[in-house]
Amino acid sequence: MKNYTITVNGNVYDVVVEEGASTGAPAAVKAPAAPKAAPKAAPAAAPSAGGASGSVKIEAGAAGKVFKIEAKVGQAVKAGDAVVVLEAMKMEIPVVAPKDGTVASIDVTVGDAVEAGALLATMNE
Image 1 (tube, helix red, strand yellow):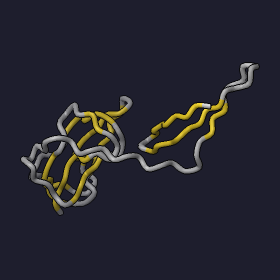
Image 2 (cartoon, rainbow, N blue to C red; image 1 turned 30 degrees about the vertical axis):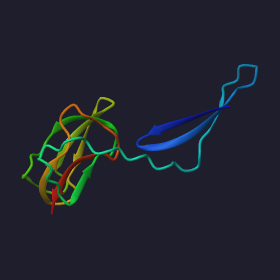
Image 3 (spheres, rainbow, N blue to C red; image 1 turned 90 degrees about the horizontal axis):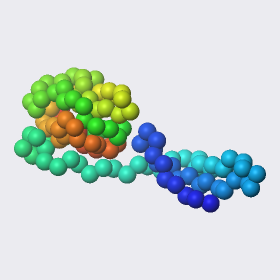
Image 4 (tube, one colour; image 1 turned 45 degrees about the vertical axis):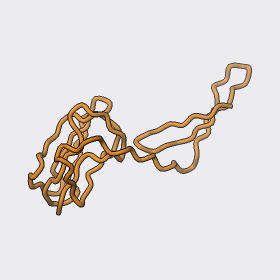
């Protein structure tokens, strides 16, 4: 029997794989009923806004690479406006403002690898 930890869409699963019978049958896989919470990633190093941060956090919904930064510090955004675009598995995933406000900081740069839950930017209402 072997134990593996697998992360799918930010959910962490502990998987137990048992050896198959000597007839070459495929191994059985047992998955837990509920996923464990994924660990939060540490915030990126120096924010580009010189350390200023807002009260509303904008976090990555999935692990990926920062593909594009759509908003600038000080820019007014509306709920649903893209702030950062992530690239994961050859797909572009926009990370949007959760509410109307002003971008206070952008905490990543293009090319940064981020984990699910990583702080990408902050904004003020």
